[in-house]
Amino acid sequence: MPQPQIVQSLPYAAWMLLAALGFGVFALVALTRWLTEATRGYLGFTSFCAGLLALLAMVTDWGLPRPTDLIIQPASAELAWVRQAGLAAFALAAIALTFVQRRSLLATGVVLVGLAAAVTALGAAALGWAPTAVDAVPLLVQLVMLALVTGGSLAAIVLGHWYLVTPKIPERPLVLQARFVLAIVGLQLLVFVVWTTLGGGPGQGAFAAFKGGSLVLVVLRLVVSLLFPLALTWMAWRTAQTRSMESATGLLYINLAAVMAGTIGAAALYVSTGLLV
Image 1 (tube, rainbow, N blue to C red):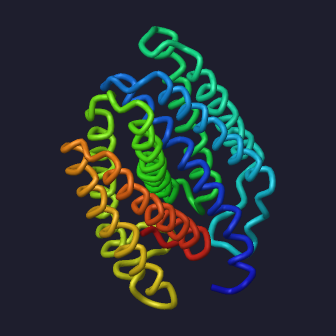
Image 2 (cartoon, rainbow, N blue to C red):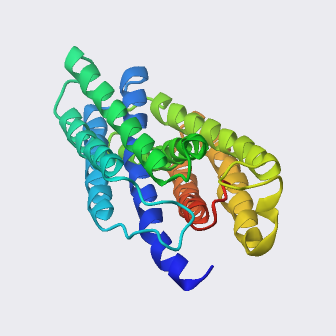
């Protein structure tokens, strides 16, 4: 990858990573809040972290360079404003959720506002950066999946540590989160096969991902950030079922490192070469 592309792609990759962490954490908090008996302390703390991550994404957004050497196009002023407004609304909703009751009409409203703001920000990013409106659809799918798996992995690690201070929490919350991340990684693997064999990104033809200078990065994406996390999350899920929470948390730590590396790599590949993997 030429140096100008590397310099310009890093801020966009950072934006996608921070947005993915914040949005995905919030989604897992919402799911865990309504389906399990997770403690209010965990839910509030994790939701607050999601808001802080969104604020960091906003700061990164303000410094995004003009993508003159990248495949993506500069977003229009209107879409850039919508993207930033979505981040701001999400951050407010995530932080507000910290202070509302676990199950209430107000909490439901805050969750819905937060999820809508997240989808708005990702949709504006996809529409603004993709070369065409058609290309924006698979990019949005990629951004949503990156958010769910990356943020979900972080939320699961925080929950694993919560068992150390609150050991009486039922195992269901961590089992649910590990199973959710496992399902999303499996879906990512399926989509990876479709995109690399049939095409998905701007001008990406069948098997184009396995040709040229991006081959090594594509293979690493498959092995390190898809197949490896698939095995790790399966083991964490099975371990959490036996209530070996320290072991499950350790596995999830390794999983988060692999998933974050994959998120950065996938984001950089798209913005610099147009490859979806």
